[in-house]
Length: 581
Image 1: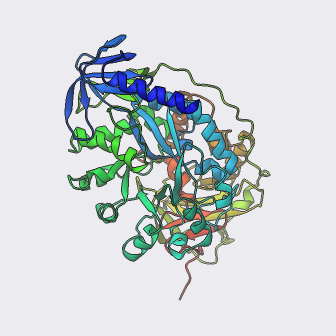
Image 2: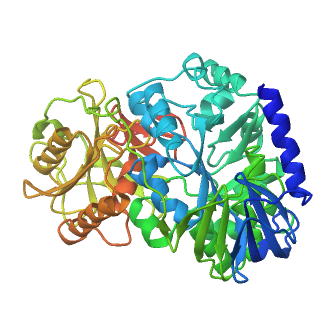
Image 3: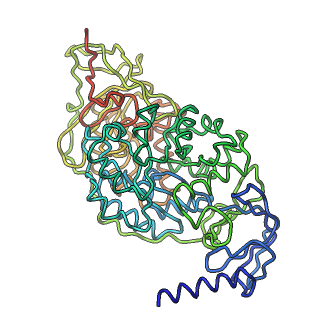
């Protein structure tokens, strides 16, 4: 019976395409972007049953005149973490679909580090209820390393439970690149499981034989390139490059200069981690396209990078182009160079107009993904930092980058040899407090170039294990910020003079809110205003996302976990005190 139904459907499609039957709808008077040959076709687009039937002089039951507007395929985010939008997949879709993103390839390793396979299943189910193609890469590194405490551990056996899910495309970013190169058994088991699918890379600064060893067992994408040289070496070895423009990591302006006629088919766009404020202000993948055009890339090439290139990379056969048999996921706009999207169709249904969603978000059950901050209240003395020497290793923040530097500094000590912040020296305390198992682990370090004074910021968003990370110039405000997060069961808190100045609750895994993106954005805006006005943080620094990446022990050079300083280059812990020779 199923076979007969499929045969009937195939026969009907052929009759529609040949003009023997009338399709449901025709979009007339279109300038159609052909992503296969780079040409613009003037004509009509016939649509039936959510599929594109053909381009040409079709008639239909319903005609919609687009008045000579351009039509392109819906945009694809080649690599992103939905959790970084701070809202549920439904609330995210309500904002990014009207901006043209109709498909995302998501890695749910943020929530997986908190809740394991239950977190992944929550994201799969929640995305299924949205007007969005949500595809997933199974998290390969939960935890990202063994040098931190996460809420879960996912091995190959556990991941295999979901590997054949129709929305799972392969294995997510291999952040444990030293383990991959060294032939770590756990990593090899996961890669072996994924040999028939796609494996995403995450190997910043790898080159030469190390890069070959990293790629040899099937790694085919990279989103961590920060230089043209890195990008060109990887493309030469057959890697697709996802050019990232997020909130903390912005690589587009640099890498787009390396895109040319010979390699453009290997380049695509991603956001990776982009916060609600930036999405609402700039856009989503449409912003990447616009920015690339502003920097001299032809509009057609930029559109190809946001559509057919990622579709081919991830073997998404039915999306990414306007051609017979493809899903009718379409964006409509009037000007190739400004690329301001006017209307969005999803499987032939108009779902957005003038950046406004025409669909409702469905409610979701969050009962299994809340109450995840399992930590006793903390006292300020836990943040004391006793030092035998005033010469120390410090994490130095690089603006607009998640890469840091390890630098040596002389700092101030009080009479008991405890570190003391000084307004003349831009070095403050940073700590990671384990929050999943109440182990009492607290890793304490020092950070430069954050410019914070007069208080503290704490958050449960700290990539990738998402323990509590707190930064401050005094222990009392740091403790208050952490204790407030315990009460909120996750979020972001700013304290000053032993008072709570602003907060945002994120009760879903300590990462997301059920509020709308606009509401979350208002809370974030207040937090940012307080960070600038009370803590004196400059508006050139994205404080919350920057802070969250200080705990990521797979991005060079020096980071901090609940177990202490971690030197990413040597992949070993590092003392805070400089060892005297």
